[in-house]
Amino acid sequence: MLFLSKFFQKTTKIAFTFYLLATFSNAFCPPGCECNDDLLTVFCDFSGINAVPILLNPMLKSLTIKNSNGLKLDTFSIALYQELEHLDISDSQINLIPPGFISQMSKLKYLSLRGNRLKLIDDQMFGNGQNIRGKSKQTLESL
Image: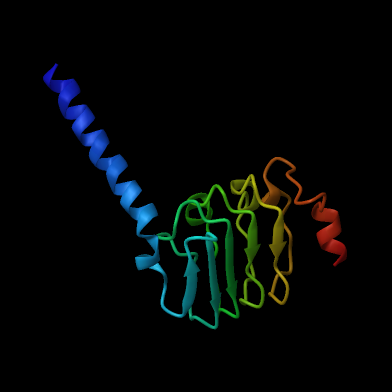
């Protein structure tokens, strides 16, 4: 009985922490970015960000990081945003997209990689054959 009581206390504290993070996420808006918690959007242009921020609202719908100087992508940070529908990481000097990066975002409808240094689109980029609005790897290669 004591074990269950401690378990529920710990679980409640963790849940409350996540609630606070989601509620006050604007406090974690990176410098040089505009964060809108009502629209669940983050817009960063020439902000100097070099990685996907991990302390944004977990319910985020739209993330734009444009004109970054060497944005590094990883599957861990993008997996935090399961509700993401719009991702614009254009003109950010990206040269590699990690395998499975796009498959982490099951609700993604729009992806812009325009103006980056991509030379190769890996077969594993989409995970298990996921398409974005019907755009497959073959369509991306023809762009």
